[in-house]
Length: 85
Image (cartoon, rainbow, N blue to C red; front, side, top):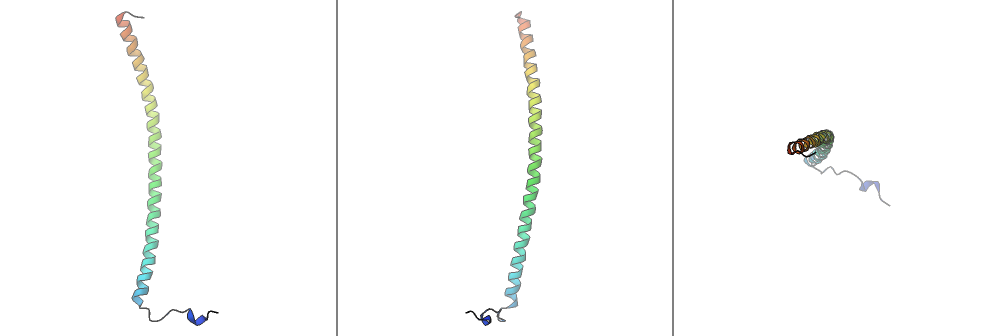
């Protein structure tokens, strides 16, 4: 059986050690919150990049349609200039 006497805080532990331990714990909590905010910021930035990518894809589709029409018109002009129909 374990006696209650074996579970105690020794008064010989210097206050400096306790202060350093508390500072380390607080530093770890602060670092974790910074990682969390960085992760949230990266998530927001990723959402913006995804939206820009979708917009660029729509613009690319429009440009490729216009380019196909211009190509068709150029082919028509080349064939009519040669006398082919």
